[in-house]
Length: 215
Image (cartoon, rainbow, N blue to C red; front, side, top):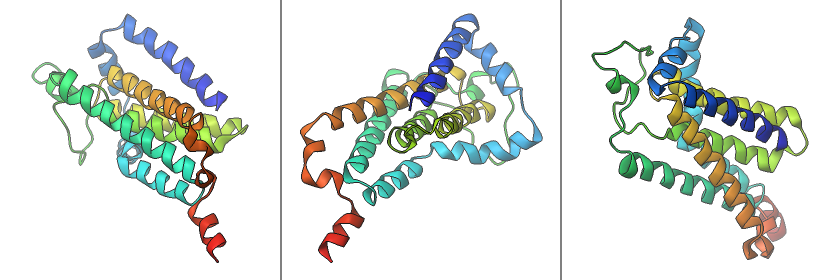
């Protein structure tokens, strides 16, 4: 876990500095312009790692591993999703996506076949979902395997960057989404493990253990 957090801390510092130094439009245009033929092929698939069905699959996986982990994951993903949608549609509902924001002002790089959105830009739901997903995996499965933690962080980062590459979000959207994802995941993991739920007899069981017991 510490390796994921070390790299994430560096990301927060460097990313925060860039957001303070440059206007969000300038930073977006610079990052969005770094496109290649390989990126056009890869990022439409990489961005799917932030979709909700991967979170659902992880919860289902943990049902066969340990019920408490499935519960932590489900609570974390639900609250992360609620926070993102509340901010998108209530607090920052007037924030436009890059395509609409730059309409008639500048051309942005997009990829053919990728459906574009115009509204509800802040924060990035895909980024929140990806950082929540991969940090959750890191918390539960990485142990002391430092390279696994770094690998999971890079997957989260690539998913976040894909939102900028595809012209769907500004860097600040991705930055905020990552904080929501990591923050709610860490808070849920900490709270459940220190609650009475973690002490229940069923918490350390799973569908596999239960089925073996019944037989």
